[in-house]
Image 1 (cartoon, one colour):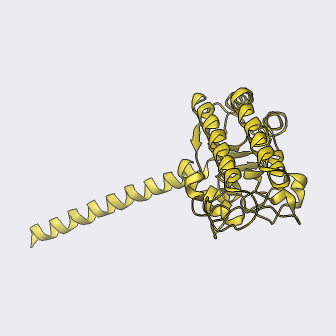
Image 2 (cartoon, one colour):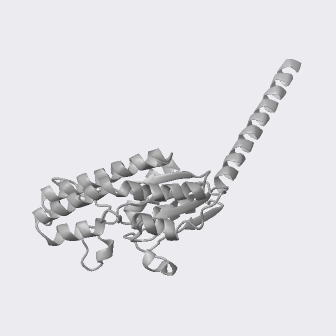
Image 3 (spheres, rainbow, N blue to C red):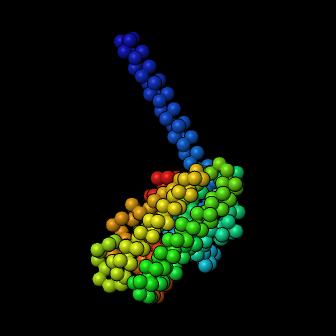
Length: 269
């Protein structure tokens, strides 16, 4: 009986110690998560254009609580969250107007940038309104820009981010492929045009991933999470051309932000 009592008492002590350690570890993890200082930079794919519910204070930047940075912040309650991403932003706009919240205490940064530098809006306008040959020619011009000029522009942004936030984990997110080839669309662009646009998106992502890696940043390719949800898929997470709200065309819907971008970012953050 005495041995049994001693054994039971020892087991109780061990269980209590394990619970105490586990509780301490959980508390420390929660404290660590809450202590994150997060800054969200970038263009319309980060501000949330296309998802709706825009914050009127953000004006033309079209920031929304339905965008992946705001969704992540709502789920993780960082100690600080600065949301400066802006619709239409180019690399120069980021360095000139979005970096003020960054500092030595910044732990986490997210950014999508480069699509507007490469002429994304003009490419899509050209392809929708003009001939197939003109569309493909404009896409090739954008690809040439990505090869010749965009890397230097990205370097400038990434260098500025690292200079202002030397300890931050920086997550650079790419852009989805727009079209499901041989999909459900029966009108609109040709398959050749859709293929060229998808390939150009891959080309832009590859260039961005290379520059991000060279700066020690994490690149996240979202093409995988959007697979099956492209335009012409029957379950699109991207707006097609919308003549009533042209600005939202070819941008993620609210489902694209929560189902495509958010899990991709969360896995890297």
